[in-house]
Length: 295
Image 1: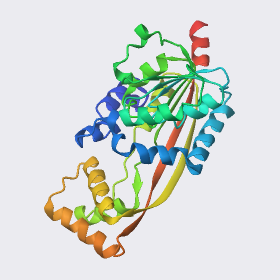
Image 2 (image 1 turned 135 degrees about the vertical axis):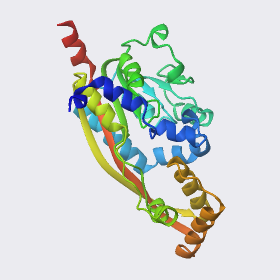
Image 3 (image 1 turned 120 degrees about the horizontal axis):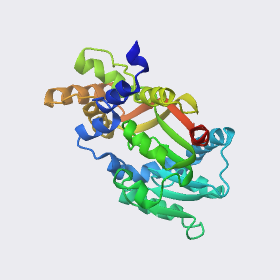
């Protein structure tokens, strides 16, 4: 029980977690900062279509509901992608520094920012992990540091570096449960003889360590899902990639089992997929922390 309240134990457990999102990507041969290169166009379309804009607005409204004001605020958007949040931040009058390293996403980000005055949004095309925060002058330099579903958050040291940039608030969102994918759930028992496992995610480390270290924060867990129709061939490749993230080695026999199942279950060649899961949002109040530090 004592270890439950020992922050050092939790920090080490997170650092050693073999199933962290970043480690899963690297085991699959994917560099986390470049994970969206191949689907940049599709991601951009989903981010700025009607449903995508509604989602961004819901999140921003929640942040505003906690007292954050965007007009004239300085915001550091880490993992900005094509501007899914940098754009609405700028629309609300914020000065934004957008950190993004994926060349196709940077190109889309530049296009999406073309209507704003020069200098309102600055793009930094470097990995946040490689930036010297002190030397860059980013120490407590931003009213809000915003990190949405970005693998830059992978242990407590990475969280501390992010927090160090914030003057007032820091927003971090992460999966709060395993990714749910209807086809993976169907196929998993065929190749493992077991139901799809449900495991805790890194959100538990973040929330517990914030609690143990005395931070003031608001948190919200939501369950979200979306449905799309995909070709059978694309589904097969997507499923194989997802299985590799779960440490499933796929030989020719297993690949054949999956392909045969998809052919029999979806003879039209079109597969309807439902994916989503639980997602966690946390808004950390650095201004409260700094106030008590000075007391």
